[in-house]
Length: 116
Image 1 (cartoon, rainbow, N blue to C red):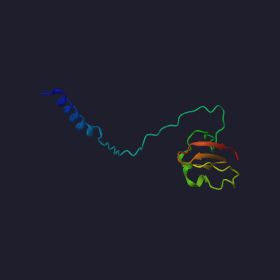
Image 2: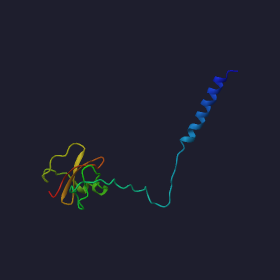
Image 3: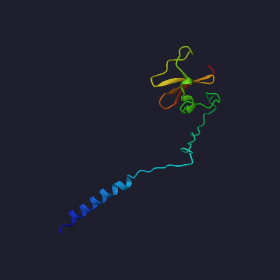
Image 4: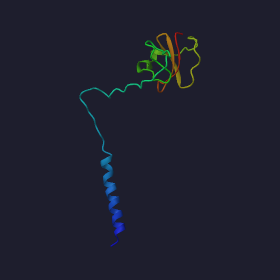
């Protein structure tokens, strides 16, 4: 009897049958309606830099809060607001008396114009 081919066949069979066990679907149907756990934004030191927005807490590199993703805050008439043309994939958002240049897809803040 050839031991190596038999051993190889047994290993192949065990791997083939163990695979579906690792691919099981996990359904978390919770009744507590808490939603996904909230992740806090990383705390960064802005070294006295003034932030934008109503509470002056928007900074370059941070993500624009989701409430500002609404069309009502987007500045389509950037010329009328004396702003430069936003690069492709970015738009101006008005936040209080400030303007924020943010990436459309991610909301990452690329630039701020304060008290404009």
